[in-house]
Structures are given as structure tokens and as C-alpha cells.
Amino acid sequence: MIRTWILLLGTMAAASAAFAQAPAAPAKQAAPKAAAPKAPASKPEEFRDCDICPPMVVVLPGSFDMGSPASEKGRSSNEGPVHKVDIAYRYAVGKHEVTFAEWDACVADGGCRQYKARDHGLGRGNKPVIDVTWIHAKAYTIWLSGKTGKEYRLLSEAEWEYAARAGTKTPYWWGPAANHEYSNYGKDKCCGSEVRGRDQWEMTAPVGSFPPNAFGIHDMLGNVWEWVEDCWQETYDVTPRDGAPTKDGNCNVRVMRGGAWSSMPVKLRVAHHDAYPPDDRGEFIGFRIARSMN
Image (cartoon, rainbow, N blue to C red):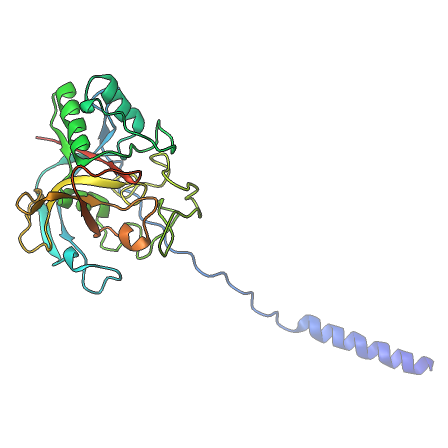
């Protein structure tokens, strides 16, 4: 009996030693994370013309391909044909969408048609102004131009897309797919808002809550739709190639860009555009301004 136990213990010890010498199973590697968008090569030039003026970012001259290729998922025929646009001048663009604080300052100073924009309970202060028409947006630029002696205006569609792409060619400036880490937008399928990742707001987010693109500009995609200067054209066949706005299309509607807090990813794409009557407004409509640098 004792001999049997000694043999058994020896066998167990040998098995244990063999197990210890066996190579370990390879560790399971985590899936690689998506590459983060590249940071600006240098700090963008910024300025503010007055204490109550929006902060502006200077955009340098350059060329880009405007519109979306036929292969882009979710694209519409009105996003083509893809065409080269040469912007041979500097201009400044709002670092973020115009806020309620900036709008209210205009009204308090006697401007903006004395229109007290409603916030629909979403908050004021550093939230983007909403419930403003294209006409109201133009009124803000007129007031700001008079106050500063500078030429403030709305962006053209081409200027907007050039600034939004910031040197990229993907459907979104950060990459090929929508991502709540970079923008405040809605559900993947209709309809309504969604809270996920960095996007912790059911509706509008405070401006600058998400990382800027490579030009140093925040919130070009999502948060609120942004009025631009252009009249609507069904295609880009006859639109300007120099950054100027389209003025000979259907001017009964004006173009909006960028999508909003309630938008599906397909409407968040850089190339997507839509159009509404210039007197339309809502809790998902705001605007961003430009300043000529002549």
C-alpha cells in the first residue's frame, strides 16, 4: 500500500513538472482601436473683434474636391458631380456655432431685428442659438459688421465644406463612420437623439464640447444645422468653382449644412446638404458666421 502511494505521488510530481515546462497559450490580443484624427500641424490663427463678438479661426487658401463620389454610402445625386474648388483667399470662420449668449448680446445692443430667439427649454448661454431663420442669421451678420467695421457674413457652401473637411476626403472629417466621440447627433436609424460616448446630451450640447477638426473648428458636424448663403441647385453642374455662393438657383429655399442633434449619420456626412425656406426655423436650426479677410 505504501509502495502504491509512493508511485502515485511520483507520477503526479512528474505531470506537474511537465505542465510547468509546457509553453503558455498565447494571450488574446485586444482589437485595435480606430486611429484618432490628426491634430493640426500648427496652432490655427484665432481672433475676436470685440468682447461680445464670436471667436474666429483663420482658414488659409487651398483646393479641395467638393461633393461625394457615387460609391459613398447614403449619398444623394444632389451631392455631385464631385468637382474641384479653388479657394484663393483667406477667410475667417466661427470657431463654433453662434451661441445664445452672442445672440442675446446682439438683441440687447439693438440688433438682430430685436428677435428674442426661443430656447425650447434646451438652455441658453454657451448652447448654440436655435429657432432662427436664414433672415435672422443675416441680420446678425449685418449687426456685427456695423459694430466692428469688418465684413461679417454667412459662409458659402463651398467655404463651409472646405472648412468642415479640413483636408480630409472621408464622409466625416474624423474618418469613414459616424462617431459619438466627435459629434452630437441622433440614432443610427430614424428618429430622435441618442446619448453615447462623449455625446452626453439629449439635444443641443454646449459649443466646443467635442474635439476640433484639423483647422481648429468645433462642431461642424452635428449639434445644429447651419444656414449658409447659397440658393439651392439640384446638382453641382453649374455652381461656382472659386468658393463663391450659388446665387442663380432656387432662392425660395436656402442651403443648410452639418446635420443636428437629432440627425441620422447619413445626414451628418460632410457632403450632405439640405434646403429650407429662408423664413423656416426650429429647435434644430442655428448658424455659423464668416468674416472676409480682404
